[in-house]
Length: 148
Image 1 (spheres, rainbow, N blue to C red):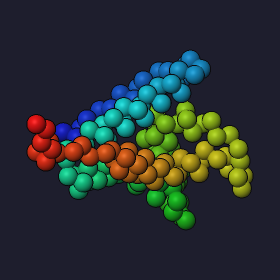
Image 2: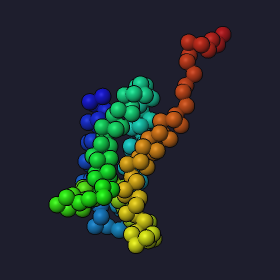
Image 3: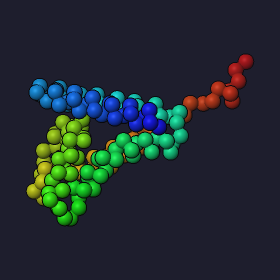
């Protein structure tokens, strides 16, 4: 489990750096954001040989900062500006997907749509994880198939 979490954190941290540097060139950050999602999806698909509990546990430990920052951003009170700091940290944590969220430039109730999408990103990642893991078809066991 530790190896899986370290791999995910290293992918995530290198994606921060790559997308942060790519924001100077228009469009490159979008391409790198899509590449990040493809790499993460490939990593999720490779978990097929592990138990489901190990996969979900690794996913929640990997995304724990996002869940904590999103919940802190949604609290009704702001003690010493905690909500604002939590939203900044949420945006920083999801830097690899912020270029894709910035394409949502409509406004709802006075806030841009990407504000709501950023708050929902932990749940969107959970749905993304579930779709990728459940879409993997199990290969037939060769011990049951006999060709003569």
